[in-house]
Image 1 (spheres, rainbow, N blue to C red):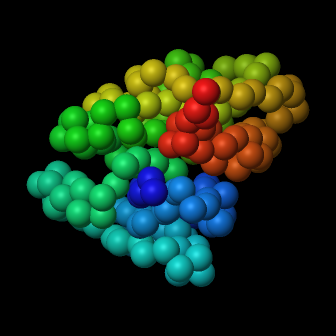
Image 2 (image 1 turned 90 degrees about the vertical axis):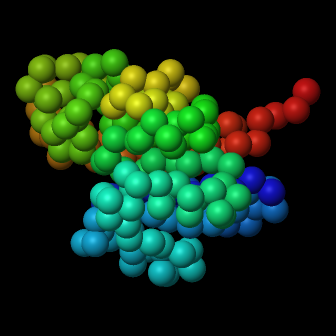
Length: 190
């Protein structure tokens, strides 16, 4: 059994899709959700889906308390699903090539500190991009610099607003993120 924890900061729609994807699995278990935002919608989703969800402080995150908790859960993989804080090097060292993030643009464009959610979509529209998409990548100690695992894209129309771009991206997120996680956690044997 592979144990996965999810980190989220917002509504939790991607966390929900991941949990639903693995709900009948005998090989993968979503053991816990960790959240740094007391107002996040992910708490309601976690309760409805019967997944434990813990709020943590910046201090607990930086002093190793959160890392020790995820290790105590026998965690194999850490999935960032709309989690906005930089991952400390201790996490990356404890889980090398086992922390995965979803970014709402085609990296290396529109990545880095402060580039998340609507900021990304506004930048895509402002730049007049004809294409955007999602990037699933390994996490390092630097925002959005880990090796790219998977990308998928969609056309951006001249009439598209940042909200339009966000909606198109979310379709790909919900479709692709759970499948890519499964391909990493349970690689096909040949």
